[in-house]
Amino acid sequence: MTTRFLTGVTPSGTLHLGNYVGCIRPAIEKSKLPDTESFYFLSDYHALIKARDPERIEKSRMQIAATWLACGLDPEHVHFYRQSDIPEVTELNWILNCITSKGMMNRAHAYKAKVEANTAVGEDPDSNVTMGLYCYPILMAADILMFNANYIPVGRDQIQHVEMCRDIAIRFNQLYGKEIFVLPEAYIDEEVAVLPGLDGRKMSKSYDNVIPLFEGGEKALKAAILKVVTDSKEPGEPKDPASTSLTQLFDAFATPEQRKDFEDKLRNGLGWGEAKEIVFKQINQEIAPKREKYEVYMKEPQIVEDILMEGARRLQPMAKALLDEVRDAVGLRRFKPVAANQTKKKEKKKTKPKFKQYREKDGLFYFNLQDAAGNILLTGGKLENGKDLGILIGKFKKDGLKAFESCYCEISEGISPDAIEQCRLELVEE
Ligand code: TRP
Image 1 (cartoon, rainbow, N blue to C red):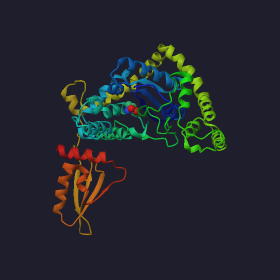
Image 2: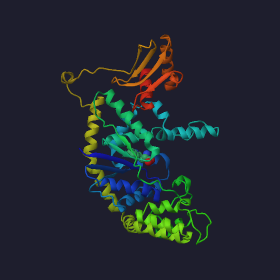
Image 3: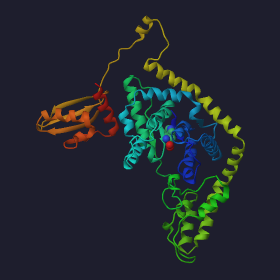
Image 4: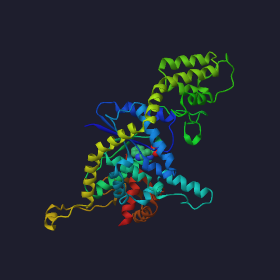
């Protein structure tokens, strides 16, 4: 069995060195491992959530596709495609929409952050919130579940979305009584460097501290490195390698021996100007050949277009097969004579989550919450009075986990608060 890695990049701007070191380079390395199958795509439907400028979207898609290819992605070996070229993704998106609770989306952090920002300035909480932003994690779930991916390499900010995808998959499998979807997991590579930006904070477009990867060529790379913040020590004075992000920038492109050598030089008084020159050279040595390829692709968009269309074409049968299965599971089937349908029909037990109450040897009253499959999600209570259990459970239906703040409550290992919330919503639906 191969392990499937899948990740999307939203084309909403140009890429910087942080994207290269933190995402592109490790993803391409990973795609070369044996027994893995990689799905890397441009999440261009996601880009529409933020960007309203068609030219910007067009340009960014092209730049990002060219970047991945220039950095060594092998389209013969990796599934490389645009989300918007696989129409099954949006079909699946709708079906998943119909089984995803609104409550889960209320907790998605991109939406919550927006509501909090609106509230802070006295605006309507939902001001400037589109349904696209609100339902963003469901589209992401469709991306992931469409190809039954096992691992999703993402930044920490996306972990919640992968967990939601997992909860949606569990819900679907339970509702329709089939293991249609594989349950994905976020994949965080602890060894991958988080690159600091010019000011020492994490390199990010939103901090305006980035070093461009290819845009602006060698000149722009050099100019940005010259702007990295350092202290004002003169050449000849010993310098602390940890006092500037130059060191981490260098490290991300150097061997252990080169790193040690650079640190020694700083401690021995290397001037900041010279240090920046060394850092520039080190980075440029890795980037320059890729930049050349990038420029070729940018001049020949048809090559990139053909590669992406071929990527989508190759995936079509897989996407169609999954969608056929999903449509069949939910009842969107070809019409057949009724009798034929009935003989096929399987008896399906409808189960729901439930609370079980019991008394332990210690004489106290306990309860546990079981999901529809009978897994125990949490155990709580330890109350002297059995009647109070009912009150607590009533409160839980209204307020969720908060209800158990005042009593003993232990969540089973590996259970996310989201899974518990999902059960609450199903209980309330009754
Ligand atoms: N939301 C991701 C981001 O902005 C991009 C993305 C879209 C994605 N669909 C995905 C990532 C599926 C992983 C899996 O970074």
